[in-house]
Length: 441
Image (cartoon, rainbow, N blue to C red):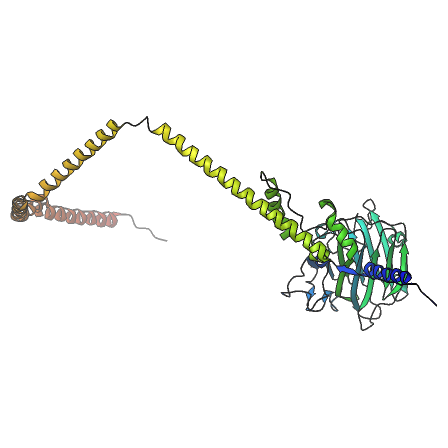
């Protein structure tokens, strides 16, 4: 078979285009478990919020235990802090479910408009209104395991629905429990279709579903009275490199949602662009979006040129500010000079000198006088006062005691009179008793 040189080039270009289309770009803010450790500090998962009901999900270096093997009736959930900003993406979940043969737990993969605060640790049977997609893995139908997909536009309350199972738009049977290895669930969202694969086997798909941008991923698990233990090993969200480069060049409203640190830095960039004379600053772009040397040179050239313009503008602003401050200083000096004349300044100086001379005279007068004579006379006066007090005090106290003491004669008379009165009362009592009539019984 003969192929012309032009045909060889066409085949090479086709193969290159196909490999480029198959290349995937991992969205780090939405992924975990694809590197050495899930958590850098063994307490949190970067970009995700971890919560539980009835227990705290256990975070290990290679897996997250959402529901424990014992006891049952526990819940755990993971929710992303940023939304998805790409129209085409692939989400890969590696999990493992283990427990008794009749375990009846369930695992949900959410893609919803609401986040942790609204959805929490709810399952498909306990959630109320939600807007988005949920993929449920449970023991529905008693066939050893099933994977089902549900959609809601925010109008149907699944918790109050009489038959939630009838709302599934797609399903397949797959025994995922007690396999001794992780099970992979892959969700591929394209422009015109949605596909679900389990362990690289097609589960179900639909070409009538269009998932919007900005929705959040969530993973929740619930165990029943007979517990199922759900462990999440990896969750990786990726998109093609070509799509990632296109999204970087689009308007800021279509950019991927930013982390909290990027959102805090964003107002500084906007304030710089609002400065007078500042040229447009190139938008931030991930390094993975720049592939060729021409794009790298163009990006470096644009940023360096913009930096030069900004430095020149800042220098010009500093020059204007310095000139304005100098003009203000001159204006203040011109307003202050006529109000204070040289004669007034000389008068103030003369008054200050006179005050200094008066203070100096008072100081010399105080230092020059001898106060020894005054102190001696004061000491003598104190001694005389003390001597007079010591001489007159005993006599005065004796006089006070003698004049204030009661007379002893009066006291003796009162005592004798009281005794005579008692004796008379006793004699009268005895006579009356002797003259009283006798009583006989």
